[in-house]
Amino acid sequence: MELEPAGKARKLEIQELEEIRNDAYENARIYKDKTKLFHDKNIVQKHFSVGQRVLLYNSVLKLFLGKLRSRWQGPFIMTEVFTHGAVEIESEESGKLFTVNGQRLKPFYENFQAHTVEKI
Image (spheres, rainbow, N blue to C red):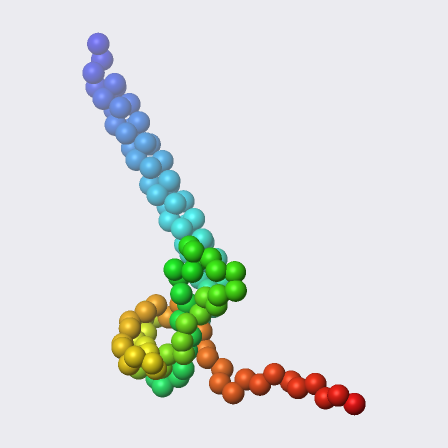
């Protein structure tokens, strides 16, 4: 039996397997980077300021639908904006403070008036 050539061949096979594994890791990293860029491109950034009035999305109604119920609660007043999209809001009715994700908020437009129809 020739052990030395068999050992060299085995080392070459192990190195080749390691190269294939490294290529697979690199391809997975490239794929993740591309999907992250695609996902982040479609996210709409919301910019809020302290004192702004906002509406809060009620995620409970997503599970228990009410046909005519609004899924938005509020208005709330922004008291603090944290990093990474976290926001502290204060209820106008009860005065309680909540910390929520900024993606669950949308601006509250005040003094919205519907157009009146004049009869001739």
